[in-house]
Amino acid sequence: MAIFHSIANGLLGLGVMGVFIGMFLESAYIPVPSEIILPYAGYLVFLHRATLSEAMLAGLLGGLIGAVCAYWVARYGGRPLVERYGKYVFIHRRQIDRADRWFRRHGDGAVFFGRLLPGIRTFISLPAGVAEMPFGRFFLFSLLGAIPWTVLFTYMGFVLGKNWQHLGRLTSYFAGVVIVLFIAWVAMLWRNRAKTNH
Image 1: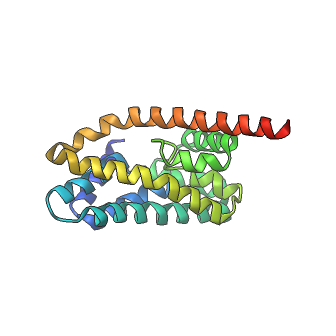
Image 2: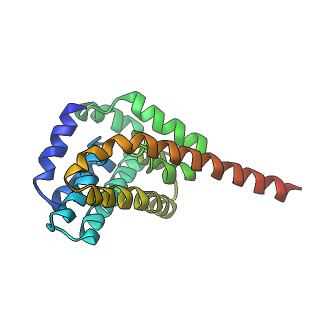
């Protein structure tokens, strides 16, 4: 949505702090596109305005803190709270429904792989909180899912340098790879469970 792209562009002027804030918002139900924020973090490294570790840490911490806040909002306020106030930041029920279906279908794995999928990653904390998924497991799977997304997009932004804005076009391809890996993971679990039952 254009308004969130504008917000993202405004945050970029804040440097590494803008990366932190942008990723916090993206993980806390505010669909600020991390496909813009993280490559820009890499671009800051290219400009020598931050180290690679600083840029990645800002993105990772912002995303995790936002996810934790979103989890507790959902756990104590429930879906009705998000639906009631989400409209003020353009959160639609269909977006929440999609994350909810993903979580119900895949359980804990939905949090890990959900962090790697555009559109799902912003809202996956909601069904996890509503379902009262144990916080330790939620945090662990969120961390494990956030690391590859953050590292990949930040590093690619650094490699692309002045062409960092073109990275967003690779998002669909990356999401496709994640889905394939997820299917392979589910198939492996199913096969191991079948062997155990025999």
